[in-house]
Image (cartoon, rainbow, N blue to C red; front, side):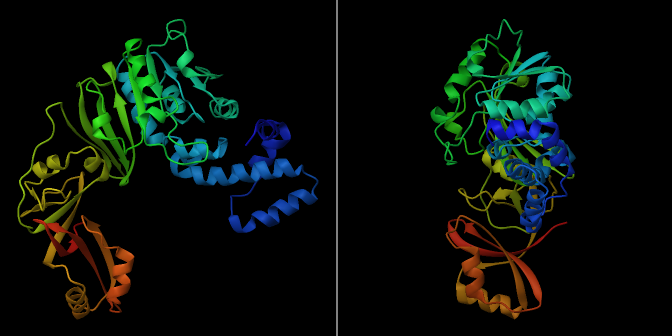
Length: 396
């Protein structure tokens, strides 16, 4: 979307058209577009409105019904924080006593919405003029928010009365490719880290693939997952990390919010041993944060292999940090053996989980060629360095 399209959408005619469109349906888009053209509506406005309708439908995953009153850019929606997670970000600032926050890379305004909803005054900045315009629309209901088009790194933080900083640097090139080097973020990670010399309360949202070697010694790093999908790692400094430096995981599921954390001394080092009666698959945020050992402690278990993030235990100890499976059988991996075994149990529907093996589930499923009436779950992994197959069933 360019500035012209944004202006047309924000006109009374454009806004009315956008909000009068039916729920987005890809199959009806062409017919709807042709009808609107026949009614004499500007083709460029029609295209912009239909694009927004599509983005709003997609945005419901992150924003729920709030999406129906918002504007989006494709890149802005891709990087925007889910409101559920943004609320956790905001709570750190309010708990730390921050009163005015600078969101240096506000994008379409998702985090800023949560900050303002928690009573924080926010100075929201974005380097892209159209994105800043979209944020202005999305934040129109929050008088305590000021949106500026500019470079957040050039703000006079003291003059603006800022006592907290938040940033979510862009981690894709203009062509859409992912950027993995923190020095190539926009703004660069080092430039953002330098801000804590001026304002101690600094929070950064980064990609969950950030290596542990890139973590500053004074940061609390928290990996976040939503319904099993690992979406970010937050770096929190100063009063935003009241328990001091460390690593942790925030696991958000329909059943509630669950947190695990360790300090600078690091996580527990679990034992390695044979497969027991139960297998536990830690949540992705727990794995990324390197805290699989904490799951082992919770379930009184051990690793199946020193290099594999599966925990096993002889007893069932439910935990929100991992999915539990009852182990029904184990065997060395072999295609013919496994095919005969599953066919002998009349298996036709097979769930394949894997870790520590190069086997491709879809290729294996085709090679097994199962046609039975029952379903099963297998886990392909290493146990004490050897490729094994575990027949398991989920524990509800």
